Length: 143
Image (cartoon, rainbow, N blue to C red; front, side):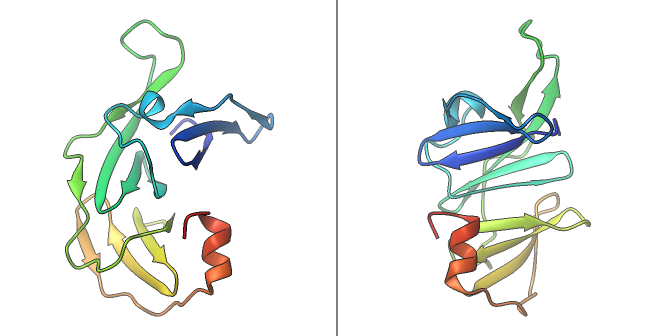
């Protein structure tokens, strides 16, 4: 990806540069992520893929350097195969997520989590960790 951190709140998104500690002006999520929903509950990156989750839909994006429209820098472009629904075996609405080194992610809700592979759309029965609501709230204000 591009090394930036993206912060979401309601319909807005900020770009934070961890090296310079600069944060951008707020932009609409749909401006930064084309064809995305207006609101996002969860955002997570795994390898080159960034996924926004809204309700039970996954919206995948890849960062493309040197956008073809002549703008400097780069842009998020929709990834092939997205949007698509969350796997039917995930029985909750995710409210937070974090990536693992094997390009899968842990999806979280209050006291619930699931192990999910974004790249090949697989689900795992991994259910060993239970988070307190305050932990989830700290990760995602809409838990």
